Length: 232
Length: 400
Image (cartoon, rainbow over all chains, first blue to last red; front, top):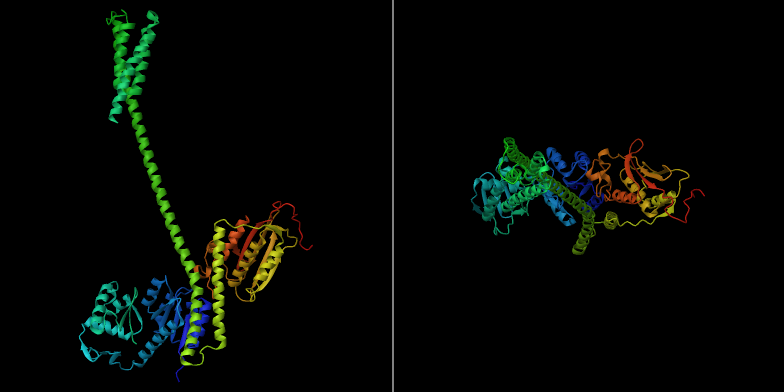
């Protein structure tokens, strides 16, 4: 039988960890808390959580440093708790490989929704590890061998770069991808400042894939941060 | 400018003629008794004076007019332009040449002095400009610094307001979420009684924390505006300390408190409530920043005839010397801004700032030093205040 999904909550504010422990536990998650990055890493090594929810500003080892350290040893999904006014740090955390963020103060439903998405992503990644020959979301489907993309069964012609970008989006469905991360993954490290490339290519993809490009269903904009492929 | 210069020179010519004429008239009173050399020297003096005041051209005019007058009125035969004796010719020509040369030299000296003066003024002007721009630059720097400070303060306040709000919002939505799912699905509650109680407690505690924060802000604002009105009365230090201790009893449950209050301490004339607040917030800090079961020691002793010293020492991790001044700054917190690592509830960052305000309002001093062995000790002094209140005798009533 599958064990309860494990969530490690890292925040230096004891009252908040108290609430999150109770709120998440009541929804069937197993929860442990840590007050700083160093003890979070210790717990992570012993306990192997399925998801890490971390604050950014903490004593000793902050959220950024924790993201960096975790990414060096694991691909566990990381959810960042950031306050308004910490935008720069938040984007840095996402650049370092955090998956998503929730802005403080937040309602528990919002956090639970993000937790579900992040956990689903690891699950699908794990189950499709065998031999993924195609990726599918809604009516959008990519055949990885023939590189044919179809929407509602109709073939859509994409340029090679458009295809690479869409593939990267779908492989990281649900995850917030910063401009830098997308540019580095699709165009290469020397293009990380060329945000206009992204705008143009995302615009073209939306025209070709979305029913209403002005109100996209697949590729969502995360204002001032990047984009997120919506797997729902 | 040019006109003024011309008018000035014109005045020089007139003065030259008038003064020479006047001198001639005065010297003429002595008639034939006067020595021509005396007259020549007097005229030379006038030429030099004109040169110094109006420059070379009026000086030349003075020399020429002087020469003519000298010749007509003082060189024999007097009353004519004719000169009989050859030696008097020499005297006349010598006077003219000397007068004109002296006039030129004196005028040149005057010009040099003027030039020097102009240069000096120019240097002064440049210096003043330089100073002004220095001042402007330092003002700009100060402004920038104060803006940086303001935004740091704003960040701190925002953080202090948002942290309890985050916990409250998360608790409330957890309860709401549960409530909704019960109503919608008629399902049993996900939260047990204990969890629900905990959420409500968090809300309660964090609401209090917000209230304390706002209270602290108001107190600080009052201190900063110099509006702290101390209600000084004669009181015993033991009473002040025990009031603080009983208020802090909830904070010190997990610590041992020790008292080190000297016998025979005098009464002090202070605002008891305010000083008790200082001790309370020092105990609060000590409890926050030292391990469970460690000792918090409260001490008081007389330093000299006029001063008592009190302090609170803990066995925590101490405060590094470079932070010892900054901890008294508003909103500074060693856990977040400094080097103390802590898995503890953090304070508002205002306790020590308020304590400092209270102590300084009493003309006392507050400082931090390393405790005995390890830990932090915060000390402050208070003037005993003898003679400040009449009618009541500041006698030692301890143990009486």
